[in-house]
Length: 232
Image (cartoon, rainbow, N blue to C red; front, top):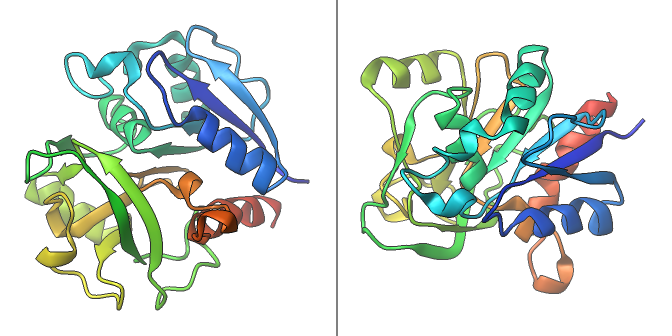
C-alpha cells in the first residue's frame, strides 16, 4: 500500500502547492494539506514540511513555525518513528524544533541563491535514499538565503560517524569542493537525517524537479524512493 502524504501549510509557505502537485499529479499519490493551526495529522504516513517563508521568516527562519500547534503533533509523530521530510524552510523548522542537529546560517555570499545544483548521495541506505545510485549526482534546484549549514566539531563528527549526511553539494561529475558549494555549508552538506533515520532535512527542492516537461526529473527519484521504501 502506498503511503499517504501530508503537506503542512504555514503562513508564508510558497512551496506547499509545488509539493502537493509533485506528489499528487506527477507521482499519483494520496496527499492532503495540513493547516498549521490544526493538530490532526489525518493518518498521514509521511509528513512534508515545505519550503517558503513561514511566518515571514521573522526572528529567524523557522523560529516561529516551530511553535505552531501542528508541530506538537509532528514532534510526537517523529518520536513514534513517523517519517518526516523538511525541504528548505522545512529543514530550517526541523532544526529549530531540534529534530535535527545544527543550524542554518545566511549564505556565505550574503545573497539569495536560486539555481540548479548537483548533489551526491552520500548514504543510500536510509528510508529516504535507499535505491538511489551513489555514483550519479542528482540535479535539483535550490532557492534560499539561509542555507549555510553549520554545526560544532562534535556534531559534525557524530554526523559522519553515524552516516547521517545523506546529500552533499558537488559538481556535475561528483566532485565536492568549494566551487560546488553554493552557500558555504560545512562539508558541503545539503541534507542530513536524524540518528533514527526517520527524519530528513534538505535544502534543495526535489518537488521542483519532478516534471519532465521542465527538463528535470531527478527530484522524482528522491520522492519516489520514499514511496518504494515505505512499501518494502
